[in-house]
Image (cartoon, rainbow, N blue to C red):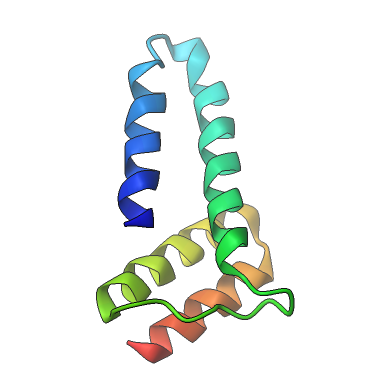
Length: 87
């Protein structure tokens, strides 16, 4: 469900991006929304709370890892590996 909401947010932001000059702004908004969402899933100690279902865990692992690739924040990499091990 949360992945669907994030996808809708991305689609909405993309729909408002009509010029090449808007792309950096779009990327910034997308990264802010993604990191806010993923930080919500992390516990205070950096661990990932329980998620419902293997599909959710797999998709979240990909989201965490893709965000790690952009930000190089090790918390996201650790979360991705933890979730991948659960699947």
